[in-house]
Length: 196
Image 1 (tube, rainbow, N blue to C red):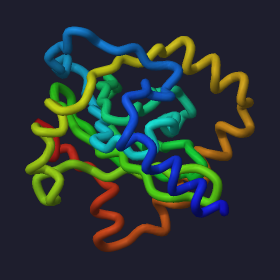
Image 2: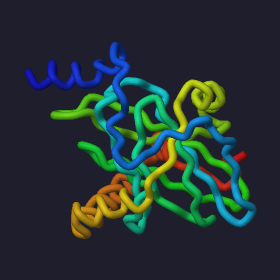
Image 3: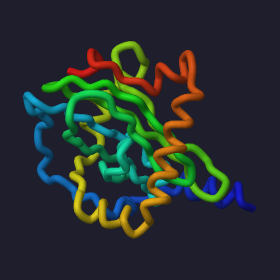
């Protein structure tokens, strides 16, 4: 019964035109060109699939700061200081991605769902020249809706969840990163040269 319910949640988006469940995101219409300020890095999170449209996930950084929610069939850009970051996605599960970012460059991260025990799980994968998803990046950007994060609202939501829960998610994300190796680690790592 649980598996059937989860499968229904994952596949419902294929037949539905319902809006995304991402509460702290606003649609950008018309879409704007994404640029990186010369002294900062820009990270674009793109979720090309409609699967699990009713499930969104908070993306936070290593300091527990709200970066955004990721709507199904959507993308958004976050401007962050250059240097090392760990991005953590908070859904039924916790997943993470490590990034070394250079100023003035744009980086891309794919977000995708999988079946969980009670809800869809969310995962992140680097989009970079050495991975197959690089060739689909431009198409995904054209086929998804652009959003922008309500930073204040998203951060207030994290405060309501509680500092201890946020710290625990960051800890779990770091723990996941420490266990990855080989291809799994490579697919969850962005280097400074992987931006455009």
